[in-house]
Length: 65
Image 1 (cartoon, rainbow, N blue to C red):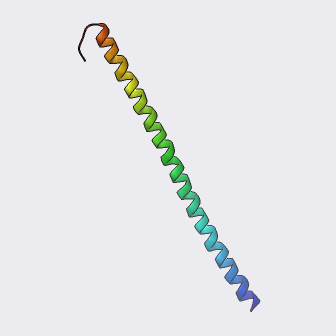
Image 2: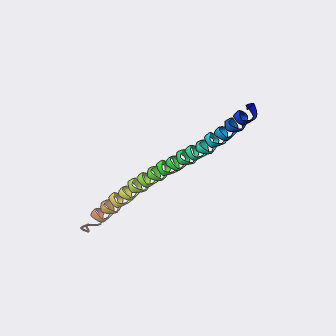
């Protein structure tokens, strides 16, 4: 009787461990997505700064952007 109970607890523990690994993997994917969004925002800001600098340079030389 106790052996069956121990086997059941071990199976339950393994299921919980497997679920926790899934949760950790999902958390890692969310963190990676957040870092990607931050990188994209930085790239967009750099692009805007470069465009602004180019417009200023063209204005300096009398060109219309």
